[in-house]
Amino acid sequence: MPATMLPATDEVMELMLEVSPGQIVTYDLAKLCSALDIEDPSRIAVEVLGRRAIVTIYPTNPLADIRAVTVEDLVMDRRGFITIGRYHNGRPAKMRMYDPHTGSAQRFLTFGTTGAGKSRAVTLVLIAEKINGIVSWLIDLKGGQSNPEAAGHVDWPGSRPEEAILALRAAAAVAVERMNRYSRLGRNAFLLNRPDPLLHIRIAEANRLLEKGAPYRDEATHWIKEIGRTGRSVGVGIGLDAQASHLEELGGSDTLRAMLKEGEVTLLRWSSSMMRQLVADGLLPAGVQLMPIPKSLRTARLVSQFDDDVDDDDAPGTHGMAYLLASQHPTAMMRHFRVGSIAPLDGLDPEILALFGSGEPARLEEESWAAAGDAYAARHDRHAMAALCTALAQEQLQALNPGAPRPAYAASSAAAGSWGPPPAPKSRLLEDRITDVLGAADAPMTADEVLTAVLADGGKPVKIGSVRNALSGLADAGQVERAGHGLYAAPGLIP
Image (tube, rainbow, N blue to C red; front, side, top):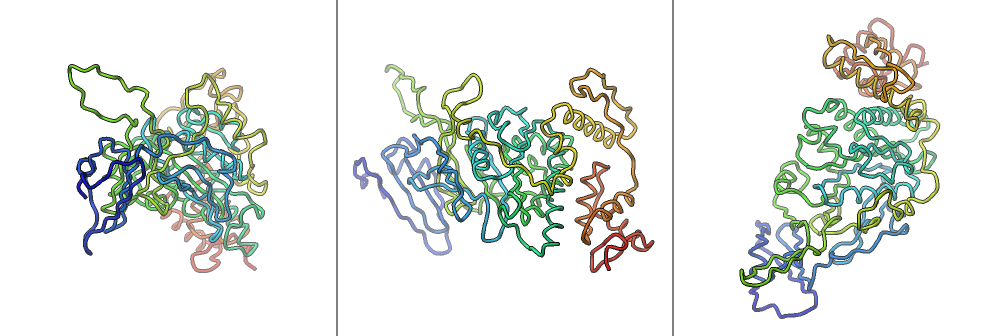
């Protein structure tokens, strides 16, 4: 439609477009704006679905202003959704926290460049988790700075890579404990709060844990994959918040990415190369285009050299604008509700604290405390957690370089606190670790389940092939029993 056919109006206009069968709609934003004689591209919203598209033209950007979030927005509806913001057309933008039809916990992935509003978007979800009685484990690898108000309102707050590994190990062990417990009850799905609460573990600034060269990358990737695979049916969800979307920034694992892309994927303002990566990695279908999210809503103008250059530094920012790639409208721009003060504050934000409320956060059920282990028990004890983290760091150093001398730790060290130097990790045979796992189990276990439990004992990481070989040898020696196809149990467990 030529620009001359568009009447000057303050009303919203909508154009329905369609191309011939066998083709898909593609467009160039700059050419589209030129054809419509629009100087401000943020006034246009384009949604594409195959060979059809809707172009909506607004008098001004409809997302320039957004109201503050309320507690009512964040209460889960009967389908497990909360309302986190508004689309450009005013409709509610929703995120699913739990699927009551399948009993499934969700997976979460949030991308955004610095200043895009990622931390506030995550804070909004953390507030919703507390409101809805979801157990939150938050490991903020920005030293706790990303979500400082959340520290007293989550079940497990952490800020170091070692704490991330300890929390991931614990979450995987909880998933196995719940799986075995539900199996004994004859249950094949998770029922919200009947009796166990939903558990979400979230790693903020996850690229620091998973990027190439990070010391715990391989183990973290393993646990995230394991939780995503086994936790979904037992109420254990996993979420990652990262600066970029490239595969190498998330553990370099195709399996991990394929699993997470089926969850709730939120894309805030992205870098210039990210769109190609999103399509290449399968987070967007081929041919899908998204309107870029600018850093601000400043309108570019040509100004004569002889005119006064009017500075427009007060143009509204775009923090919180995003696309919900797993929603029914993945190409529709939305904006998160405002969370807290717009201006920086010298200290914790009282508006955010008020939304969290004064009550205690939901806690992990007592039946899973033993599975969650010493790290869960020490999660609020600074000195005990520091000792566990120091021991884990030493364990990692020894695993990477077995010949390296043990590091010297001063008794007054802040890392060790009053606990002193951590003990050297004990070297145990894989067969002993496997028999311990099967001896503590109340039901037969597969090799994959045995691997998960063995890796959670804090010993040297092992591979599934080694576990299968060890199980076969133990079974041949009569030290474990074959309880069915691919199932193993301690002697005497099976009548």
